[in-house]
Length: 137
Image (tube, rainbow, N blue to C red; front, side, top):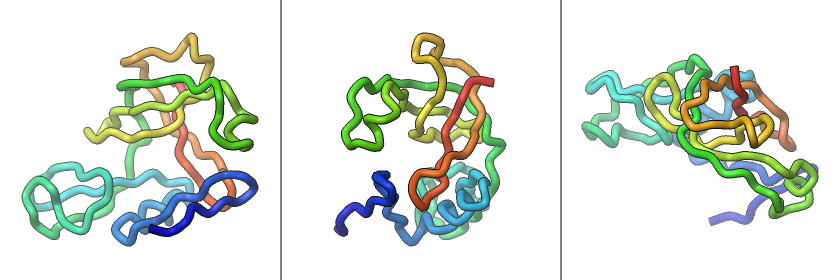
């Protein structure tokens, strides 16, 4: 495993080969996921083969960027100076309209975030990487 790289204080993701198209799409402010053409299942996180049927019939599709809050937690003490600068911030799982769950930052007043709340993606720059964050619609 390699060391975590930081740019402007932000930890940068380690792009696994199967997920490289995901990271490239984010740089263009597009949110993508994998879909298996053999069994019609959504696949997330990225794989080299379908974890549902075992076939290597995965294609990348663009997400609607919409979902609902599935779970969340508000962080009051950031682990690094960059995260400390934005506390409080909320992270959690968003159930995407396409059926998969994405762990992400959820923006907004922590008192107003609720399970089941509709959210939509927007993109932020963190170091060299564009990342998806979600906020109430």
